[in-house]
Length: 76
Image (tube, rainbow, N blue to C red; front, side, top):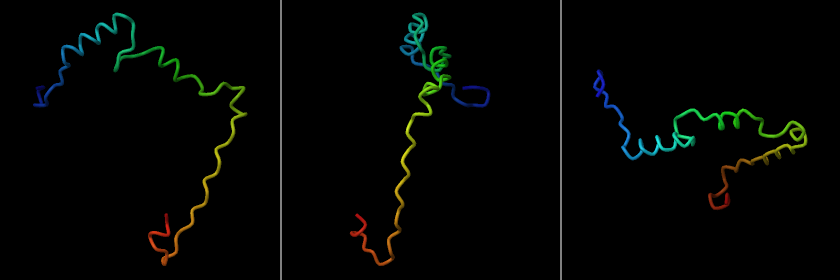
């Protein structure tokens, strides 16, 4: 527990060993900086020459509100 009485999390030994092994091998480790992932997410999703050629999303169909006399089984 810390000074405020809050329990501190401790990692399971097997997890700690796995993290160290992955880090030593240069693999991505959850919770640690990953330069490859950072470079990937900074890129645009579509190359510039294709962005304007993408089709627009179709408009959603208009929803009709049921009349107050419509039975529940008629709404299926």
